[in-house]
Length: 183
Image (cartoon, rainbow, N blue to C red; front, side, top):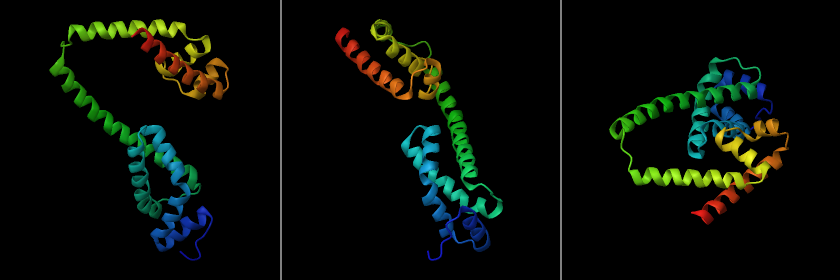
């Protein structure tokens, strides 16, 4: 596209005036990595995140014609986040229905040998966790048991983010080795 404006605000004004979809394409190429990152953060699945990126930008074609957007980047972030949250809510309802049917059909049925094996594995895992270095044990517990993110773990432990990542990675490897050794 010739004479494409470089400023987001110019692009938005020109799009609102002309309706040239190519202008939304400029914004798409500019902000696709941001939108993909937000989608991936919330949806935790690459394919779903890719689909969500396309859905968000498809919606932009109509939304930008009717909304007065002053700070496009922050508005896009909020719009993307809301889109992902709506997808998660819709998915949550479907999962709940599927799980409730699944549990009702299988309620009370678990093979005794599977239960014993599971308890043994959990016991081994607890013993292996105790054998980890203190920093690894602390970071692994916060990450997997308490489902904290790296940033939250750095705040709780006082360790820098690289040390936290390293402790989790080394802890996972050491747990795997320990479990295989005792399994």
